[in-house]
Length: 168
Image (cartoon, rainbow, N blue to C red):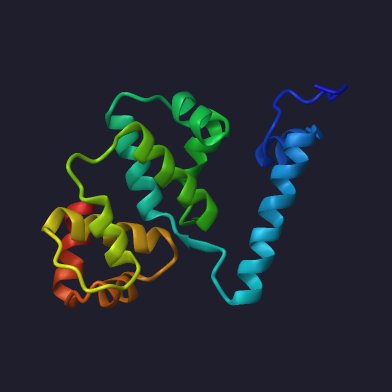
């Protein structure tokens, strides 16, 4: 690829870990660097607890996907997926990619997406239990703490814990 001798190409992982300097890898690295800088300026934590991402990765594995299959969808190596299970924290952007891949490969049945989106926007919406759980998981993936996400959805602490226990 344009004379690049790296063994992997085209994303930030290839740029950082494999020395790829192809146009797409440079652009992805620059975009993610800008996002991290903006998050730091806004006071948004760059990292979140890895538990939710690990749970979603385990669900993908339970569905029969290998580390290699998951890695291909995330744009990382199989060993990169394996290392995610060893960490206590992960970048919010990584968690967001895992959530996207999970939704793509294991879509949730019969979730009223419009109602969930309205709840995520802070509107008071009466959601069935599954949709409350989905909204809670998405808010946490977006960087809110479980208690902040529960308050946004007008849930008690006990309800928030129960939904999180069901989700894991």
